[in-house]
Amino acid sequence: MLNYFNYFTEIEQRFQQRRGSLLMLSTLDWALIETWRDGGLPLEAVLRGIDEAFDKYDAKKAQAGGKVRKVNGLAWCSQAVMEAVEKGQEAATGIAVAGAVEAAESGFEEDRVAAFLKENAGKLRAAGLPGVAADVAGECAGRLEALAAGSAGALEELDRTLTVLEEKLFGALQMAAPEDELVRLKEQATRELAPYRGKMQAVQIKQVQQQFLQKRLFEAYKLPRLSLFYMGHG
Image (tube, rainbow, N blue to C red):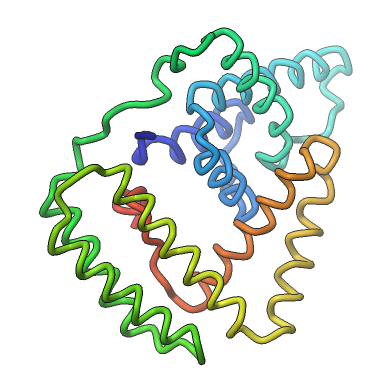
C-alpha cells in the first residue's frame, strides 16, 4: 500500500528543496501528484525524476551564467519523472522497487479509520448539494457508515471502495454543477497546463485535467476527500 502520509509531502518538500525557495504547490501541481499516486508511481522514482530534472536545470543554469527562467511548477518535472519510473521498472525486472510499496498499518488503526469514515459521512449529509448530487451524497454517506461499522480488513480493498465512491460523487457533481462553472474550470486547467504540454503525454494531460476539475469541485461544495490518504491531511 502506498505510504499515504509521505507521498504528497515528500514530493512537495523535494521540489521546494531543489528549487531553492519556498513555493506553494498549485491546484494543478496537487492534481498531478494525485495522478502519479493513483497510477501507482513509486515515490522513490518520482523523487529521482525530480532530482534528475533539476540536475539538468542546474547544469544549464551554470552554462548560461545563471540567466535561465525560474521553475514555477511541478509539471515541469513530469517528463523526467516518467523516465525515472520507466528506468526503475526496467531495473526491477519484476521485483518491486524498494520503498515503493509497504504495508502501511501504522496510523490506520481500526478505530481511527472508523472515525474518519463516520466524520466524512456526516459531512456528506450536511453538504446540501444540488439535484442528483444530493441523492448520491446520501447513498455514499450510508455506505461510509456501513464501512465504519465493519472497517476491519484489508486497507487496500477499503481504499479502492472509497475511490469508487469519490468517482460517483464526482460524476454526480459534474451533472449538477452549472455549465458555465465547468467550462470555466476546464479553461483554467487548460491555461495552467499550456506551458508543460511538451513535457507530458496526452493521456497524462487528460488525467491531470480531470483531477484538477475534481479537486476544484470538491472544494467548491466543501466535500471531504474520502481516500485514507486524507486521514493525514486534514
